[in-house]
Image (cartoon, rainbow, N blue to C red; front, top):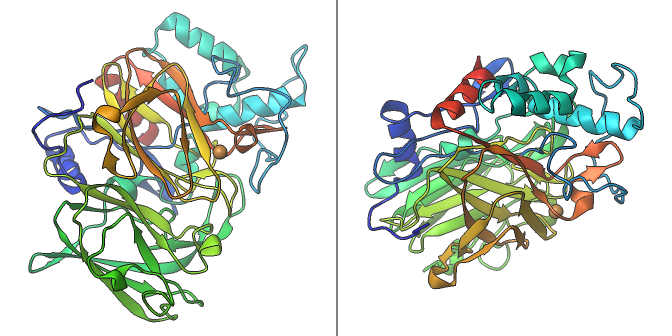
Length: 443
Ligand SMILES: [Cu+2]
């Protein structure tokens, strides 16, 4: 697609604001405590510019469907904490079909948990024949419990992606945007069935809230350390004028002690997909969740897209995660045929992850926030190193449930099926179908 245009893609706050009023802002649901919180499924149909999104980690395709590469068998089983060895409500339901082993049962169960009652919601969207095939693949005739349960990502008692789509709202001090954050100890559910892990989070969430500004904005970010240990915050990718804002203890500042607040102040001179994270005891603190997206929108944004998805990977505490959760609690990317999805890959982990989309092509338009211009390239597998960010566009032209996963196979599948860095791109015929799916999730 033409990735250049003169007009502006609205900033996230504006986009959300418009989505509530003039656009459809569709919400998936994640459960926080007992309440439903808007989560990662957002669909915003842009009038002139294309802008709308779905934002959720991508889950896996239905077991046994068109995802042979994702579901290669005989994989090494380096199951990080939180892998597939989980109980499942339907784990013991029914006899083991001829030719299957327990692995097949477990592998199907995890996909059942992933889709939950989203599976019946697909009826009427994909057509009777395709739906019947999907139902057969999942064994819907079993009447397994997950058919009436919310998908795993909805059940996770933790904000999923809502706060990534709805950036932290700043206050204004003159022309400076002021963001207040806390650094907290939290309990994170990697998926809906695992016990929580002792994690860290900005504003008590992992990933932290997205901080989003316009290019040229003056930014003041105040972090209050509620930990029992010291920390610091680095805005990754910013070209600081004052190097003392760079956030590296004993190089540019003293560490932030427990109970102390620390202020970072700079001008967002360079646009793009950036990050913020701890830069102190970082292999531990970032690994435990002190990370978030920092997006600086160019004015205007030359990139056209309908939906946007922030995709932060991590690979320490809790195993292999996308936006703080592992499959099946990853949130599918939803799109309608003809739309373009912008995915902002951000790697906060300690390993490289090659993200592979099935049945589609990614056009990579920016690296580390820097537009690639005529060097933009197409691929279906994109390796993202620690610290790197890539902006990729996927223009979808066919309906389907497409696996979207890291292609280091031990990061995605073990002896009990898929886990970790697995997601799907669910493409439906129309925007109205996206709406219907989201309604099914929140109903
Ligand atoms: Cu990986």
